[in-house]
Image (cartoon, rainbow, N blue to C red; front, side, top):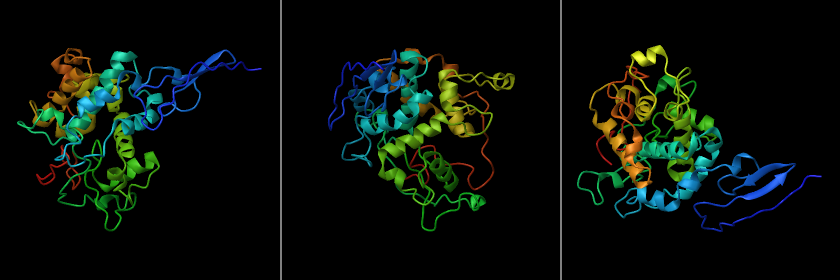
Length: 323
């Protein structure tokens, strides 16, 4: 007969706490845990440290302190609970749970650094400084086009009346990207791209999926290059591609930001990452040397194709210069 021992349960109620002590059971000599909202179902994995153990509500609020101000365009949309709920899907696959606490903290800061830089409405003299305004947007405010590429009309046909402009935490552009993301998340984003701007958990989930998923076969994901899963080939070394934060910029944006020397968009992402490391109590000194942080000298993993979909805005409002 299996021996069941209940150790402790903490019920978060309606307002979920940042960190929930697990329900622990010993089943046939094995320790199994259930953390409720972040790690549901009894499993050995749920006994491990998860993101809410080291990244709590107050830290999320510090990182995105201006997101709910009256002038923010997505006030009331983004919240901590949505982030953790989305992250819970990918934590068993290593997101924020790889390589010990410090590495995990740095990955969360790195991912959110990308998010903050892509969704910011901060500028040089903004209250609180330009780095305090991440998650100001959840969509491109004045799209200049529908981002429909007919090259994909048989695989990801555009829905009449739908606009595939930038939406989300790592904004999605173009019909084929909505199609691919929707397939992965099992949500019909091709017909309903607006779902991303209506559901913060889904928006975060789409962004984490992008972080965890290689753009092409035989290429690493942003997660892989950051946590050390990726081992550079001789060609990578000759191309000055090294594991670290700079390589995440390369994976996600290729020649839009990398291999261009002192590029403004690249520096903006790096600045958010360093700022978030400080606010999380890790400290920017843990970020590593410049050649690890930057992709200025790296040959891009992917070159933009000379087609209608060769590029997309590097910030969510850049399509026509309006937010």
